[in-house]
Image 1 (cartoon, one colour):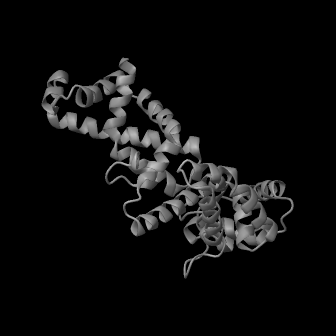
Image 2: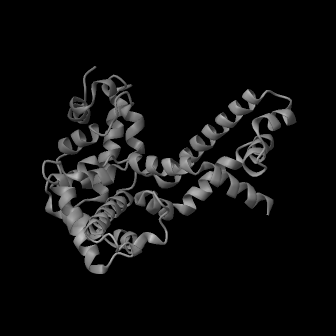
Length: 300
């Protein structure tokens, strides 16, 4: 099949397994044209060559994924800005630093009670890591996959940089740990603590949606174990089944809750894979607490 102009610029940079998933070059051509139109409309002042951007976009398609299906779900305009920054387009860099590393990043760092002078230092450090890398590490912006909003992704990058600075300060002054001591449980990861605070409302809504999708019987099974403290044998006696059956029910219910919560969060946050997985690790580690809180809320 003969490729058309945009497809010719895109396909050579696509992973082989993803290339095999292409349905038709005609459909792919329309998808690529739409992505470019949105990118050009969002950033008309940039002069990034189409071929450079389409190669960058191709590298964001995972092995075995269909490009025509994946690309419309990506933040193609944000990817265009990221690509232009990595190509050292000065207008793109100015837009990134002035707008994307602006008020939202400041607010995220302020929530950590970071001093104003530290915020500016952290933002300068982030800008360097994003665009130039650090040591033998490539520019951090290359890791932006476009699955979530670039502003949200940069907020997490900023918070991680701030946490790194906090850890370094603790190493030099281990007694000066009051900044987060009131909120950090022993052994709790500070990055997860930040994500818990940042996405508290989104998580509660997503988890509530997952819980409400359960049947009354399924919620009662969880209630018997988490709230009533019944054993597997006692729950089995209620439903006239073996304890092994109850154990399987519980395992499936928890898997379903995590899966449905993950889907709801993904739809709400449009966040990056790494950030979402951090949130899901936190949810999984505190699943019974979340179940108990939700069930008690229904009873009140």
